[in-house]
View 1 (cartoon, rainbow, N blue to C red):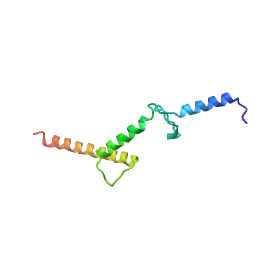
View 2: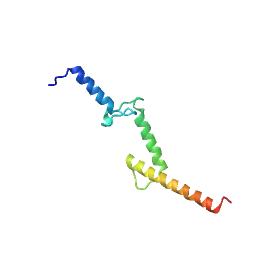
View 3: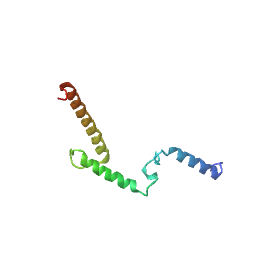
Length: 97
């Protein structure tokens, strides 16, 4: 048993857990200790946004998990930026006429 009073031990636990929380309300420990600020709607919104993202990114091979979808999205953004850069350089080289 600890020599500290129970109230001191509880307050130390609260301080430790509050330090672990980020600005978004999530603990670093994991998803299970998440605080819902909007009644659980965030999970639905994320799912809807992932579905929208799936429709925007050209499919490679079947169903993608969220992490690979985000990776593909990042790669696609780089591809599009490169294409824009090349087209801008072509316009500069040949002129706008």
